[in-house]
Length: 232
Image (cartoon, rainbow, N blue to C red):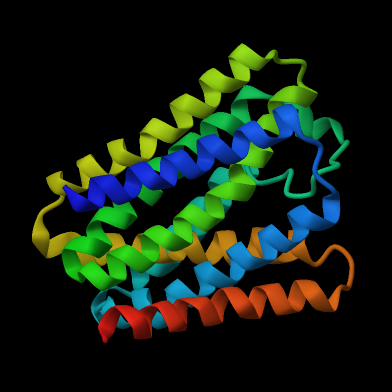
């Protein structure tokens, strides 16, 4: 039940961040800092919490998760609009990237629940890293649909549909046999690794900025600090 609640918070992060571009035009530099911090928190969750929980025999699933998400992204162009001011036609395709993001949201929800079942502390930290990551994703969803000419009602419907898929994914995780939990966590780890290293970091570093580097490191350090506080 707690894992579903954590997934619900991740969904709310997606929804609320997606509302921002509808009513407020953010500066591109600010979104870059958000993306950088999100990358740092995801990498921190991977290295400090997720990898230690994975059995060596399940390490192949890390690669499977990484390359599965690579193929999914190439087919749907999800996360292609990390910068606030994206202009190419590939960023205007509308519903296809949103569907890709939605499938990713289910995986995130499953990851939160499975991580919590393996170790509650790991589940909480994974959930928090997802919550931070969903801020740039919510922004991207609104930007993608706005640039495709979609109205506010359509955008709000898309954001709501995306958001509800986190707790749906968390609920589906309870159908996974306990013996496969670490394999599923390994798959999600590969997913996280691709998102953070291949999407978020390159988006954040379009231009050199020492503050962006600091934001990445701060994100990773925040996971260590949180881990220390929770385990006390």
